[in-house]
Image (cartoon, helix red, strand yellow):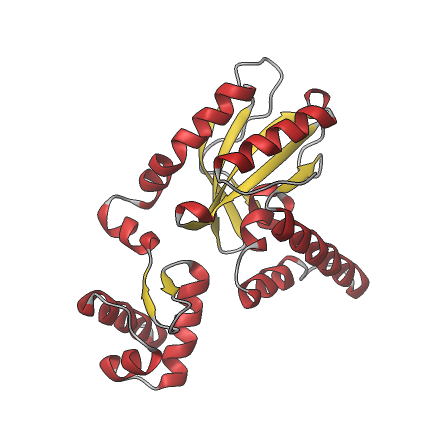
Length: 244
C-alpha cells in the first residue's frame, strides 16, 4: 500500500522533471492536480531537504543539483568528486585529517576522510554518524538552513532532559548557530572527543547546502595562530571573508 504523502511528493517532483522549467506554486498545484496548501507543505519539506530550490526573483521552484546527482551518478560519489580538490588542498597544506560530512535528518554522516600522516590523530570512518549539534560539520550546515528547518532541528536536538536543560541547550544552539552563520565557519573544541578540535565550512557555495568539510586537529597542535591560518585557508577556498 502506498503512503499518500509520498505519492503527492513524487507527483510534485515528477511535474518539475517533466516540464523541465521553473514553476510557481499555482502552476505546480494545477499540473499535479493537488491543493495549493498541500503542494506548499511538500515544497517546503523538499526545499529544506535540498531536493528543490526556490528562486528569489519570482518565488518559482525547480529541481536541485542534489536530486540530479541521485539520478545520474550516486550521491556520495558526486559529492566526493566535488569536494576532493578542496579536501586535498587542506590536507596537503596542514597535514591534518579532513572530513566530508552530509546532513541526513538530525545526523551527520561521514562520507569521506583524508587522514593526516602524523602519528597522533583522531580518525572517524566513512559511514559513521554523529548528532548534528555535537559536531562542527553539523553546526555549519544547520546554521545556513532556512529558519523553519533550523528551528525544527534545534528543537529535536533538545528533546531529552529536564525542561531547564532543554531550554539551556536550545539557547546555546541558537547562539552558536547564529554566530556560525555570521562568521561563515563553525568550531568544536573537545566537545565530541577529548583532545580534538574541529573547524568546518559549508559547501553551500558548491551547490551542496547539506554538506560540509571539517579539519580535525589535536588541541596541542592548534594554537591561536594556527587556528587562524586554518580558518583563513578554508574560508579562502570558498571566497568568503573571515574574522577571528
